[in-house]
Length: 198
Image 1 (cartoon, rainbow, N blue to C red):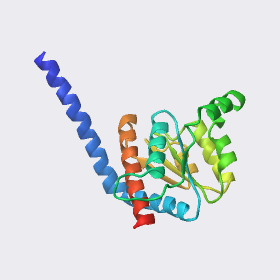
Image 2 (image 1 turned 45 degrees about the vertical axis):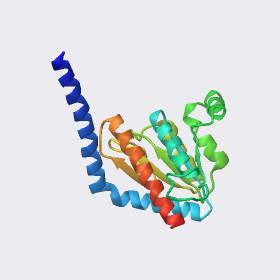
Image 3 (image 1 turned 120 degrees about the vertical axis):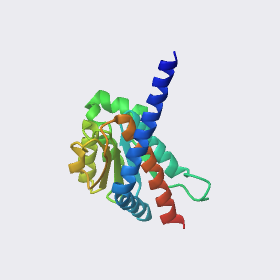
């Protein structure tokens, strides 16, 4: 029993350490890219555009979380107006109708066709960068003359070369990538708030 407890403790500590090491790597290697993406998003809002976000599974949850922080606020540091952000993965009736009529690959691109404007930005969150529906979303956004950003993982996948700006979390583990993505989204929100409201 004591050995099993020690194994569990080691597992917990190893996973936390793995997350710490990855975040230090992001701090050292990707801070400049995080700032650049925050500037693009802040400029979009200044130009009266909106941020469209999408992802699948846990990345859909991260997109919804990020949109919530933008529309509501990150913390009580700022009493501010709402910022325009829409998550394309949260409308069940649109997703199911589109998947039924046109296929799941079109569930995001169809919404971009309806909502996207040249002053808008599309931000896709993906741990692999290879999701067909996100690739179609980027293609549609480019047709609409929108800027495109990929918050990615692993080697960035196909999306790293398709988007205008990519930030690839240097890890092969989905859970570590997702943990990093939400940290980056929080940092982006704080930088956007400072840019627009300081």
